[in-house]
Length: 110
Image (cartoon, rainbow, N blue to C red; front, side, top):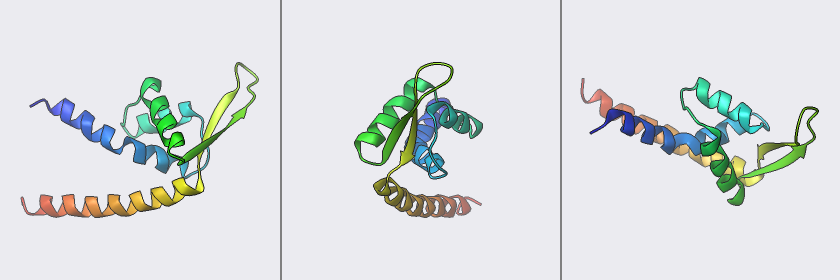
């Protein structure tokens, strides 16, 4: 079994949650989201992020607005909708429960 593949799958599994968490701090431009994900070692490229943003938008969790740019084409800024805020709140609960469950299994190894 390839450990790097397993690690990558684990990161992908929490990516949508992380994007929603980032946007809970306010609207963001996709490159800003990528920077934050890279700092957290959840390495993402634009080719991965844009389909996720589109899926989250189509699910009603995100919305966006266009802003004119002084140096290029208009920029799309994403933010959570009310539905997205509630969804993230539920994910926070689930994440905490999952983290507690995983930690409790780790303690049994000691």
